[in-house]
Amino acid sequence: MKKISKKEMNKFIQSLMADYTILAPVNIEGIFFFKPVADFQGIDGEYKNSKKPPKEVFFPQTETMFKYKDGKVESTEKVKGKRILLGVRPCDARANLLLDNVFAGEDYEDIYYTNKRENTIIIGLACNEPSSTCFCSSFGGGPFSKEGLDILLIDIKDSYLVDTVTDKGGKILTGEFKEATDKEVKLAEKIKNEAEKKIKSRIRIEGIKEKLDAMFDDPFWDELSERCIGCGICSYLCPTCHCFDIQDEAKNSQGRRVRNWDSCMFPLFTLQASGHNPRPTGKERMRQRIMHKFNYFVENYKEVACVGCGRCIINCPVNIDIRKVLKKILTI
Amino acid sequence: MRNPYLPIPVKVGRVFVESEDKTLKTLDLLFLKKEDEENFKFMPGQFCEISVWGKGEAPFGIASSPTEKGFLRFTVNRVGVVTTALHYLKEGDEVGLRGPLGNHYPVDLFKGKNVVIIGGGFAFTTLRALTKYLLDFRQDFKDITVIYGARTPGMLLYKKELNKWQRREDLKVYITVDKGDGTWQGLTGFVPTIVEKVAPSPKDAYAVICGPPVMIKFTLPKLINLGFPPERIYTSLEMRMKCGIGKCGRCNIGRFYVCKDGPVFNCAQLEKLPKEY
Image (cartoon, each protein chain N blue to C red):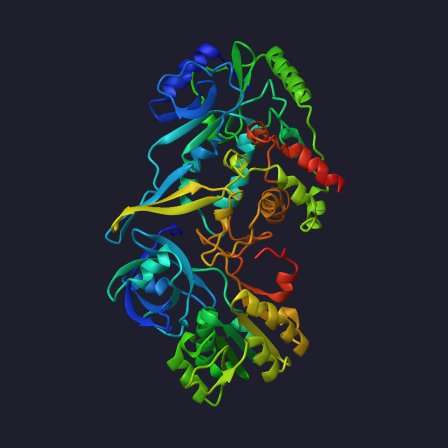
């Protein structure tokens, strides 16, 4: 394992800017967003995780798919330059792998997504201080998980230990890196163990899919959806949610086609032109969200579409807690 | 690989008003590029997304058969922004097309079998494609029966073609309307009732049914009573769709996306899915 002092790290990141756009967590009035940075001065000590998941780097909230004029279509699928996404938390890195199933799948490749994935190197930052809403370890992840990362950084106070995960990541590590001492590696191990212990929430995932198999018509969904106001924030800020809307913005025959994040929590999502809506009330929509993540996705891709980042818990205006929902499901 | 979100350019050929209330129009679309036409390989039951520039795109079942060359036929019910814009198009206007999308009727399974085609209202579009396809390979199939109903004679699609079909001896055609007018000499009555009366034999037979939900709901039990097993009854589902390739997330029934895994399902498959359509 390599190491680099935080000071040298800043210089190193700065040096990468000649070849890469650096996207890092930026503190905007106490809320963190991944933004391009022109002058890197380290990762803010207050940083826990970003408000919007870094999926937006590959699957932006709003994205132009093509422009058109008088029937001539010009695609905007090409991406310019290479990018480094710095400071991604292990949960979100795993979420990208889940999204790959959908967007980079065998049948139809979503080239807008895959182009951005290919031109981006992801440098993760291990979670020394997981939040009370974190439950990544329930779903196979962990605060020091390397899945979906090219490089993992471990904060050991004045320095980072640098764990190279992929060749793609290894290629950029030139110059300022020294070999970590045994003592430092042991320290990192100790921080890791402590971090894992700090995650108090544990959800037993075994059996949830099978429970849900038999629960489509259960009264549980009525009860659960009563409190929901259908704001959609749980799906907007979910790192594994991938639903989108497609709209044209145009004047006469000139315009562009855009896609925007959409949410299964909205009635218009499934409303048909005839007026028929297969998911007409909050009950069906809440059921769809839970079923998609813990049943349908599991059937299709053999994995649960949740990484335990806790964003839906933190941001829900009516305090719906997915951990409690899952625990309840297991008792039905 | 081609970007599946980019439409290819096509232009409007023949435009035809199908229904007396003018809400149903048929448009033939012509490829503008030879290579697009050559690459466009489809089967009856598949659909396309049609883009009207400046308005957006919407999904439509292909009403022509792959055996008909040089054009793709779509029948459009005027209900929303895109369909209204499509109704205003004239011959020569350019639109965009994505497809073919989704799966198709399993015509290979139908080979050497009897086929019963049951349609209602303007859902007859892909059934027209299927019937035409079967007729163009007539020797590959045994008896073909078409049962088709609409509210009034004036709401029937493809009237001229239906007349031609009715005169054929290698095809049984039953056209019914809920309510006749002064000149109507055909059958009257709802589709389920006619199916019961015609009583097609389930022996060596497949049924394909497409229509408004209420028609399907009452026709299915009739077919089951006649002895058709659920796995030999096929239908095509409608859902709100956007991407057409199983990514945008709105058209799922359980784990299946109607746009990608459907729209054609057999009733045995549907029985295993949640009733959310």
